[in-house]
Image 1 (cartoon, protein in one colour):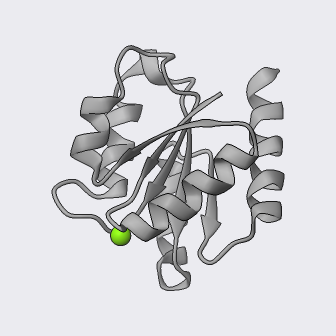
Image 2 (cartoon, protein in one colour):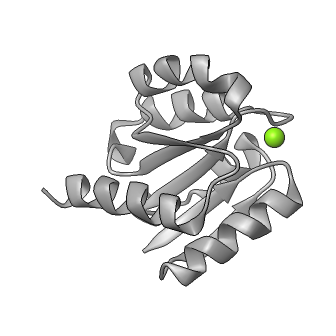
Length: 124
Ligand SMILES: [Mg+2]
């Protein structure tokens, strides 16, 4: 399983990458949505994208819209990583094609549970 971790905070990226590695993922990091789009590569290269909301250049919502505009990338599972003050935005993100969201701060256990549900759905 390959995950793309997109966040403008280097600290947040390493926390997330460490959690994901412990869950068996290979991880790649991007500092904003634009850099992430450039790293995506051919459809199928990544199984999962963990996406911060607030970022320079291209924010998480804009990244989500760009990916969901491409039907060939429908299999990429997108998890929005949000703070409590942004939760009202999550309805909009889910309507735009995000698969799940997690609220910061979260434990590895919470992340593992969300991802296992998500990937069980993906496998059907
Ligand atoms: Mg941010």
